[in-house]
Length: 115
Image (cartoon, rainbow, N blue to C red; front, side, top):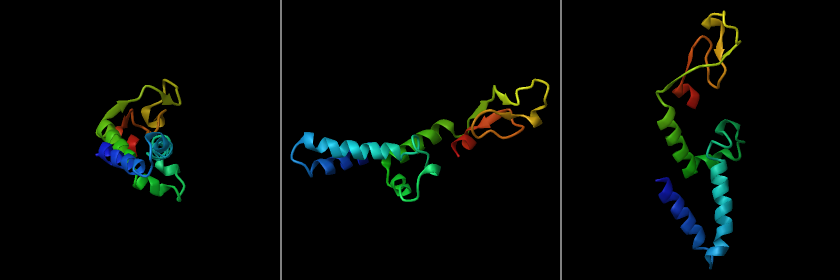
């Protein structure tokens, strides 16, 4: 679906120009904006309010979200590094040293990582 939508966006922009060469500059600028606002380079939680609307109309963002949900949803990742790194502390007093870790858990839930 993202391929079809992007293809039509590029064809629409290309129809406004006489040559392929002259249409490449605006297409590159728009494609760069769509990739930046997809949620990977610039997370959606850190987007400014005036630029957040780009993410809602971005076909790359929907494709990225679908790939991330497909890859991480329902998976469990075991932790290898804990904070603090003392060996004699119980698991209740440690936390995994990665994003979305919860105290007292020896693994990270993939659904929590997505959030």
